[in-house]
Length: 235
Image (tube, rainbow, N blue to C red):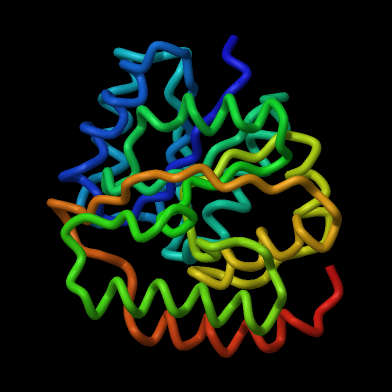
């Protein structure tokens, strides 16, 4: 059995899910995958079910009863992964904006660190095919989070992460109620406040070619306001 599981939250990702799964399963190291589908109406879960026959030991699926958001999808995935005794637990986007080949680099880093982040901004700005307005919005959002919270992470909203098992147990020991980008910020903030070793690994982030982005200005605004509350919360 592999010691690593990659959690992929999905909502209407039928154009991408087959590609990312095949890419993960083609890596030199063995990774298991848990797809947490947010009740996609486009048949994403059906595609995963059909692929299961090709990867019966490596591919797993949880289907939510309703669309519940990114944070709850990841928390369901974390709970499942911890029950199944994996040592390294990954987050990755379904849209191929993160290169599955970088899973091996993150895992290698996490043998020494508690939390390894695939970072767009720790070594300049490494983003491909994003309009400049969105690059600036994302980059300065992370600067804002660093200023408000003191969190020493360049890419605070990153969604490509490897957690060491013991670190993840500490991070989610108290309930997490945030979702979306705030969820990504809160997990990193908790890790830092608990004294865990966080390491950023530079990656190249590529904008999706298929499907629709789930990021909206409303989601980002909610996250930025939520950072103020996070700054004075208990972790």
